[in-house]
Image 1: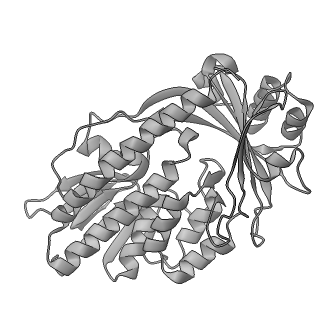
Image 2 (image 1 turned 120 degrees about the vertical axis):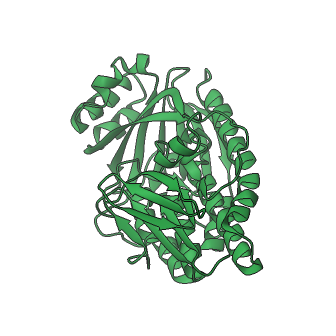
Length: 379
């Protein structure tokens, strides 16, 4: 690669920050442009699962001190995934014994993101929304910001999520569509052990049939995290018809109204489940639309590419969204660094990356679709 190689990353989420860590640690010039005004402004949900592939990607990309921060601020490992009926009759139990103590499993999304920001104070520029780009006559990329101004680099990576402005320009036909499910996220503070014990030991799905279900998962931090107590993630996933409100109404509801809607929806479920919602933090509730991307054919590589939800948006039913973004970051970092050592161009690195990323990403999308079908089958 030329000595003046500069990597621009649009989006400071899980994938973008992991890529930035790998490139910065290797000595490359990299900058991340993030639309959030501060590191703490992020309202996307709570607990996320890191699988073995995600752990491997983090190990490949992060310097030891950053990896240590993530381990220290992660949740304690669980060993069960279970499915219950709304009457708390056990349908299925899968045991995962012997998870290595150092491996991440459950992490709090906001805490995890702040950990990934470690050492990147001079790399991440908050309050900068990439709104578009232009490939110059010399083959470089100039990005524009919605707030005004621009920047230029050798390569632009769109890591700006399902609503990616980079993808809209690069692949205008690749628009994620509504998956037909809404999720109401909340949290219940943990002050003691949970009963049944399956709620304590991992991720639980309560199946309400083809139109509704609920997921619960604990985050008990390995070491205390300031401002974020241990909690049980409380989610209700349902079709709009089951919720009985329009999207226009749903996304204007207050946290208290969303909590009440969730509680009313589970009003005839087992008393233990009703009690979880009754004890939940009312101010923590927020709505999310599940979206999914259709497969698209490979496109000609250039000085602009995308990763994570920006290209293969998927519902969280397969537990693979964050992990696939991490794998994308690790693959792209490997190809960029390999190109830098071997004298190849950024576009050649992008070509090698996309050949791996596309089939892997859309295989994860397909698996999320299959898992959703299973989760919303009749108990």
